[in-house]
Every structure is written in C-alpha cells, then in structure tokens.
Image 1 (spheres, rainbow, N blue to C red):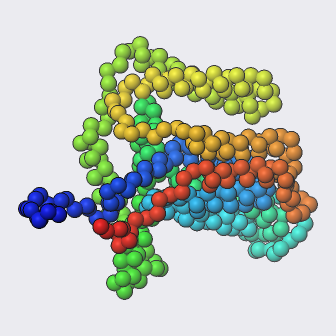
Image 2: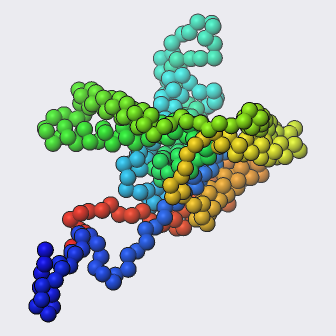
Length: 393
C-alpha cells in the first residue's frame, strides 16, 4: 500500500506505532530488577527465628507490625501475593484455639486470680494430669496467650515470605541437587495462593448470579469446583513436567556419587551436632567449629550433587547488594534477640506469676526495627497495568 509523502509523490506507507509504545526519540525506561526471592525468605525466616526466642507480647507485636508493613509496601500485584491474609487468619485461629484449650483443658501455671469456674468432668486414674473444666485463672490465660502469640508471629513471618517471593523464581535459583525437592516445595507453596484465588473467583461469580456464597451450602457449592480445579491443575502440571523431560539425570561416575553421599550425610550430621553444641552449655567450645565444618561439607556435597541435574537457567536472578542488605537486616534482628535472651532473659520471657504487665525492652525493640530496612532499599512493586489508561499514538 502506498500513500503520498511530503512532496506529493506516492511512497511506501510509514509503519504506525503500536498501542502503548512511546513515540520515536523517547527513551524507554529499563525494567526494574526484582529482589532475589532467596533474600526475602532469609529475611522472613530470620524474623521467625527472632519470634521463637521471646514470649514478650510487645516484642512479638512489633515483629508482626514490621513484617506487615514491609508486605504492605513491597508486595507485588500477583495472585500468589494475596495469600498473606490467609496466613493472618490462620494465626488468629491459632490464638483462639490455644486460649480455648487453656480454658477447657486447664493450664500448668498455678494462679490466684480466678476468672470463672467451669463444671469439672471426673476422669479415670490413667488420665492423671489432664482435666476437663475447673478453675480458669488469669495467669493461665496469660501464659497461653503469650505462647500462642509466638506461634502466630512465626506463621505471619512465613506468610510474609510467601507473599513477597515468587515461587517460580525461587525454584529457578535453587542449586541443581535440590531441584526435585524444590519442585515439591514450590508446588506445595503455590497450592494455597491458587486455592485462595479460585475461592475468590467462584464466590464473585456466585454473587453476580445472585446465589449465596456464605454458610454451609455456599461452602459446599464453592468447594466442589475448587477441588475439581485443583485436580485438573495437578494433571496439567504432571503432563507439562513429563513433556519437558522432568526427572532426567546425567551420567555421573560411581566415585562421585559416593563422595557426594558421604559429604552430604557427614555435613548434615555435623550441622546437627554443632547446633546441639550451641544450644547446650557443655558444648559451647566445640559447637561453632563443628557447625561450620558441617555446613562446608554439606555445601560441597550439594555442589557435587548438582552434576546429576541436566538443566539450564534462563536469565538467572543476581544476588546484588540489595539482597545482601535485606538478608543481613533479618539476620541482625535474630542475632540481637538471641544475644538479648542470653544477657537479660527476663525481659524477653516475662513471667506471669505474679501477674504483671510486660515491659518493652528498649534495645531489643530497636533491634526489631532493623527489619524495616527492606521497605527502603528494595524497589517498589510495579502498579497493575490498566489497558484503558495506556497511552495511544
């Protein structure tokens, strides 16, 4: 097709720019590289480790607030990132169940402040140490609340990692020796976000059709399509993995296989022995050297074991300075709370007898605030694209 140019003579038609592309001469911004998913998991697991070292409700609430703020400002606009709310609901359910068990089954903490008394059910002699009903004290409920809040904080930290790190990119970053295990873990981690997305989609469809989406009837009618979709997804995944040659292994000499097994097994045993030495008072002298030797042996075994995996990486995620800062901030929180627990255990594990309000230790609280560093050093997530707002030329 020809059209007239500026001189009036016919010429070739100029190509029209596609919708959404910038005009000629305008520089195209480079896409921002997302943070390495392993850094998010190290940061979240370090916060979870810090949560296991204390029962102070103020520190635990601060840890939950820090992780929630980072998720709020750095969560990407993807379906799997919406699973954070499900982990928060699970943590709330853990709190309610733990308090219910403390009310019905009693608490090992003796107390003097009786809140109410339930009818006690007599149990046979072989069930000594367990009671149903009886006196419910404020000290027992407070102890149950502190204990449940620690587990809830750990669940919320894991939910933060699941909402911030892409499971597929995390699988791509694993070493070759852990590829099969990583596939199983990634499939298990993506089950919950896909399940939540299916439930929301089906409930919205039922509301548009004027059908109930709540109650037992709505749950049953939504659960069956969700189960059917999960089965179809599993069959499609199995077919895709089979078509891509999943499970192929390269030919490795027998000596290399035996060396890999010996290094991996010896490294795991060294890690277990070193961890036990660090946790006990008698093993303080040999715990750290054995742990470091075990880690080195395990890493060497994983390095050799990667020869069996026949696969390549397309555009691997770099471990840059931001990833170091994010993982170091979480490690600093865990290390400082462990140090605070050894120096002043009373501030991190407040007692409930006598019943007193917990105090907020200043420098452990300041250490927890170091976990906010990812909210300032990582790039903001890209906004969801709206085709109606794209520029046209």
